[in-house]
Image 1: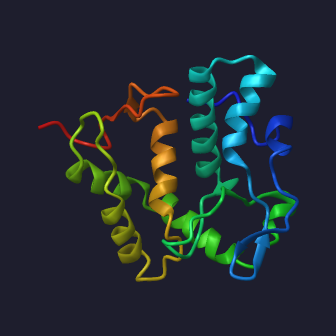
Image 2 (image 1 turned 180 degrees about the vertical axis):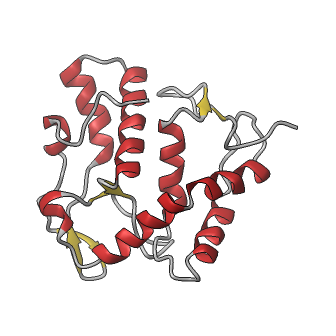
Amino acid sequence: MTSRIKISDPEVTALISSGDSDLFDGGTGCQLAAYGVFESVQATRGWDRDTANLEYLRFLSESYLSGDLIYYSDSPVRSPSGPVVTIGKCADIPLMSEIKRSQALIFKNFDQFIRVNTTNVICEPGAVLDNIAMQKLADDLSDGENTNAWLSFQFQFIALGVGWYEGISSTEKGAPRPPLCHYE
């Protein structure tokens, strides 16, 4: 599923900070005011809420999978205010090596992150991914070197954008479907 929104679109670039956003303890970089993308494409492209939501989820999924964005914080109690932009002038940030390791971890082991959910999540409305199991898996796979406390949150958006949820809309959470879960 390909999004009709690209990181280079004017609606998106207008929502990327200049590179001086406070991302981490003493670190700066570019962030995307992500929810603004949803609102902006409704206005500029005349999309209804459900179309804008679907394309927004696809955009985030593609951007996380391509490595253009990452949802990153090294602390589970400090949530990022938005995704970190990791391309162009925004790639020159102090924690880029940690960010690249986090991205590589999810890319290299994507199937294992799916499988940990398949066994732990029942396919039904309201079911959520097993974030605790995914974070434990990330820690195990990286020998305790995973620094992204929000890796499972990023994975959630990837799953939404690739269509592994049924019945999602701008007002409905939907239900996970295989391969993210199993039926009883």
